[in-house]
Image (tube, rainbow, N blue to C red; front, side):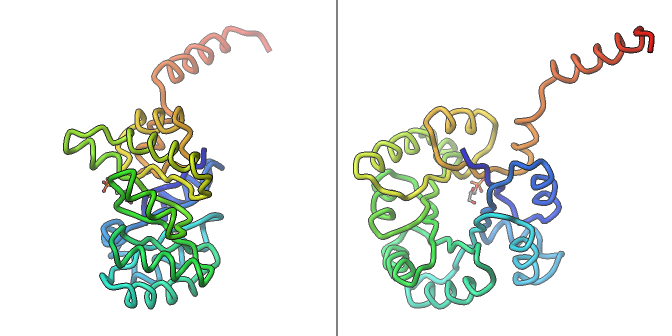
Length: 216
Ligand code: G3P
């Protein structure tokens, strides 16, 4: 399973990179806005693109397809690893198809049903991003759509990869890995929680105490 960071924060990206397990990054307008004090949109994005050795999703904000395509063409010029994040709307679907024809990868975002994911795959999206946390927020079982999409893509041999998004805690990662999701994109705080266990810390402390008793 590939691990992406869902952030535009460069220091978090550097820390995850140093761990040697970072496969890519996803951003959205909200995450970019959080980093506004660090520079312009372009400055922030260029720093991310040169730091990450893998796909980086950048979201368009136009609502019509011609605007989305125009934005996508500009964003794609920023780096070879740019993936264009496009919302799953009628205009978004048209955009995914047009960008596929131009050889530009897309990530269909704001996916809340399996059928939306199916349409994105048919339109040629490289990735679909089901938002599991936001579904959990409204008392639906978000991970069900990941399981369903896995079945649908297998049924029809779609090459579209599933990015589990809107991840809030380690259980989301655990469930996604059991389902066999291609990618999980997570906040840095969730990545930290995957590493830590109190019994690991307690074990290290005990070993170090006992090691002091050994004659060298
Ligand atoms: O990047 C999209 C998604 O992961 C957003 O997550 O926590 O705002 O629902 P969240």
